[in-house]
Image (spheres, rainbow, N blue to C red):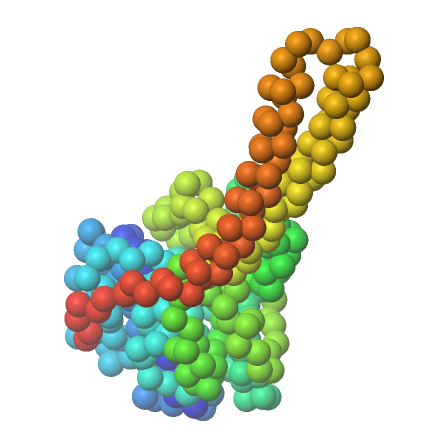
Length: 310
C-alpha cells in the first residue's frame, strides 16, 4: 500500500528535526517489511508558522525523498491544516498525527494491519494519559462526557491520530462545513472501523500550542458545529419558565381578586413581566432552533488556502 502521513505543524522548529528522524526510521522499517510502498510520503503541513518551521521542512524535503511539505498562506487552525493535508495528499490510506509525536508511532504498523484486515478507519485511542497534566486529563475526560451528553458521536479518548482509507477521504470531501471538528465528522461517514490503544508520551521539545482559551474554543466549536442541543436546552428553560409564569399569573390573580393582600398596581405590573419574559425566552429558543440549522448549512468560507507545496 502507498501510505501518506500528515502532520500539521505550527511553530514546531524545536521538535521537527527529531520528529523527522523518528518517522524516517519508521518508514524505512515499514518498507523493509513490505508493509508500505517505497512511494509512500510524509507530509508536513505548515499552518502559518512564524518561526523556522517551513525552512526546516524545505531542508528535509531536499535531503530525503520521503518528506514533502504544504505551506498554508496563514494560520488557519489545527483542524483546517489537518484537513488541507487529508484532502490534498495521495495514497491508498492517510494517517494523521501531531508533530510533537506524543502519540505512539509504533501504532502505525498496527493501523496498517487493521487496514489490511478490512478496516476503512482506524482510531488511535489514548489508554494512559499520565504524561498530561492533571488539569488536562480532567478537562479532557469532562469534554468527552459532555460531547456524549450533547448527542455528538465521538470516540472516547481519541484525538486526531487515525488512519483513513482513500474511500473514506473521498467521502470526507463531500462535507463542506467551515467550522471543523474532525473527531465528530469522521464517525458520521461510517464504514468499518477499529481502534488501537496506546499510552501517550512526553513532548520531546517545545510546548503545547493549545492554551486554555484555545481548548475551550475548540470544545465549543465541536459542540456547536455538530449539535443543536444547547439551543434545545434554551428552549427547555424557556418552556419551564413559561409554565412557571402561568402559575405565578394565577397566583397574582388570586391575590388580586380574592384577598385583601394585594398592593395596588402590583398585579398589573408583575403579570406582564412574568408572562412576557417567559414568552420571549420560549420564542428565542424556538427561533434559535431555526438559526442553528441555518448556521450549520450556509457557512461557505475557504477552510484553507495553500500557498505552496514541495
